[in-house]
Length: 309
Ligand code: GUN
Image 1: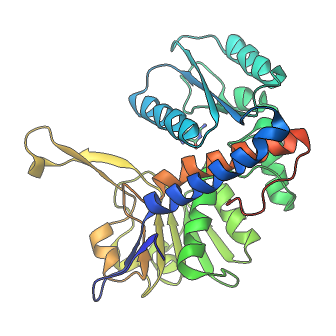
Image 2: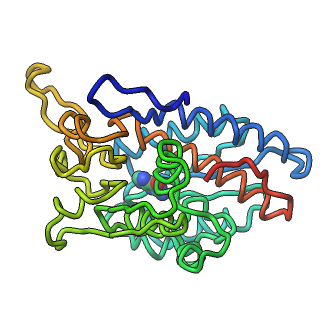
C-alpha cells in the first residue's frame, strides 16, 4: 500500500500520513467537483484566526492552500489578538447566515480573554467541520451521523490502513482532550475496538500500553511514551507535535518530536507514524472531506460514498 513504507528488518513499517493525506485530498477534490453543479458553486470553507500565534498562522495558511488545491473556496477572516468575544460571536453568526459558506472553522487556541466554548457553540452544527460543537459531540456519542473531529478521524483512517478491520482490537488513547483524546476514544469504539482512555492520573500507563494493539499518544509531552511501553507489533499513532531544543543542530537549534520516543518504539512496533509527516497532515485531509460532507448535507445532496472519514 502506497501510504505504508515497508520496514527494514526488525523495525516498524512507517505510516506515511503525507501520502495518505494526499490521497484523501484527491478524493475530496473529486467529490467537490461532483457536487459543484448541484451547489451552483464549489464547496466553501471559512476559517477564522484571532491573533498572531505563529503555529496557528502556519496551520491556517496550509488549510487555505490545500482547500484551494482541492478546487474548493477558502475564505479567511483574520482579527487582532484583542478582538472582543462578542464581535467574534457576531462574526460566526454572520458566517452561519451566509448561504455561500458550507464549513466554519475557528482556529484554536483563542486568546485568553475569549471563552472558547462560547465561540465554538455559536457555530451552526450543519457547518461544524471541526466536529467540536456539543451537537456534533452528542451525535458521536449516540453513534448518529454527523461531522466527526478531524485529527481523531485521521488516526482511525491510518489504523485501518495498517490493520484492516479494527473489530476487537484493544486501543489505548493517552490524553483526554476535547479536540483529540475523547473523540478518538469514541471513534475507535464505533469501529468495535475495546478502548482505554488514559490520562495523567492513570495507574500503570506502561503496562496498559504494552497490552494494546493500538497506542494513540495525544498529550503534548515530548517522548513521554517510551520504547519498552510498546507491545511487539503494535500500531503506534503519535498525535504530539512538540518543538524541543536540538543542540546537535548548532546553537539555538530545535526540532519537532512527538509524544512517543520514535527510535525506541520503532524497534518494537509493527507500524508507527513519524513526527512530522504522520498524523499531522491527516487533520487537513479530514477537514476537506468534512467540508464536502457539510456542503452536501446542507443542500440535501447525496454525500459521495467513497469520501474518507
Ligand atoms: N488547533 C490545532 N488543531 C486544531 C483543529 O483541529 N481545529 C481547530 N479549530 N483548531 C486547532
